[in-house]
Length: 332
Image (cartoon, rainbow, N blue to C red; front, side, top):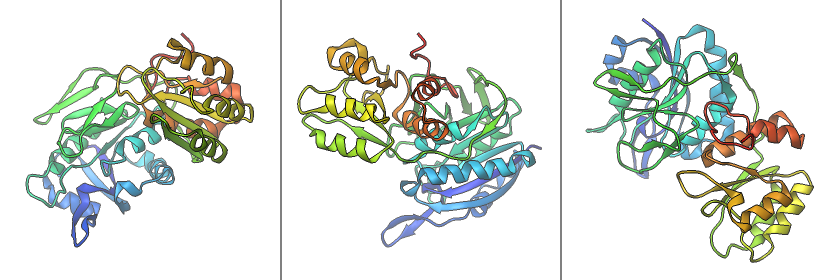
């Protein structure tokens, strides 16, 4: 049997009622005890890394998860991380850049209803995650949830309560799990040897534009952070009102990195399509997300800025695909 390490971080799956609402309280060992059928799939050992609501997860915790996998990498055939759903997509993206080209499967899962409650989806998600992690054809980092197997750089939470809460953005699901069987649609490719990174530049922010937002907010973020991701409208662009244009030009001239993405979930950005985007991209040298998710943009920028401060190298690394995060880029 394959040897799997289950890493607990808390979340809904481990929650119990309190006077103020659900709170993660169950240990990873207790989760395993409540789903004894998991022992028929693999030999599983557990580590309780955290036990917190995923709202409280930060990039520092991503680094801790990656380091835990690194120190145990040679001892196990695969890894399962139990995690809250609210920030699961961010953690999945963050781990994609901290652990690249993993020959061993790293699976992230959780639940919409706590395991301790009736009609919970937790047992199914745990079984599917362990099944996928124990399969000899699995590799890389994926989210396994409600039968879907989604690449870590492409996942997004789409529903707050439905069991099929997650979907794959601008990329197909790579597999489905039904009645204990894995139906594979594609195999994620790997590029080179497995690489672990130990740091992220967490001084990176994200701004969602809304109509009429004053440029003072943008100026503050540009002064505060080393890099910023701007979620713009539609194909991407900067409003002509207030002073967005000069704020961004001034910041990039000072060495700040600005990435433009879109609030629209599907099909990605195309900044050059309209004058409101084309002018700022040519003048300020903005990076563009294209078909990347906002979660992946944010996490990738943290990784890139931890590796280099050189503007040309920042651009090269940002546009270099990692774990299928980017299909269309400046190279085209």
